[in-house]
Length: 135
Image (cartoon, rainbow, N blue to C red):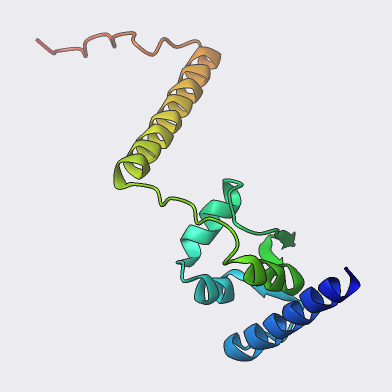
């Protein structure tokens, strides 16, 4: 059991050395642009998956900057072949999610406008009186 733990530790250390050398990582934390190169994903994709809580490894924020601890990246890298890969989102699912988000945003804007009109004592659907001289 102890030799197994030692073997895992060695594997993680080799992975850390490899990643540090290949991607120029000189710190204990890895930022999104470097993760993008390692994972082969665009930075906006990584930011979105972090924001939506579905990012593939543990992460934290240093101030407002999301980062992954080098140890966690090495652990993930060592286990990458052991776990099933998630099914990529289809174009239809992505479009549906985008449309649902836009619909929610529009509803929120409509509610906000209605609240402001109510506070001002105006009705949103009230017709304006005709201008003087208009037919």
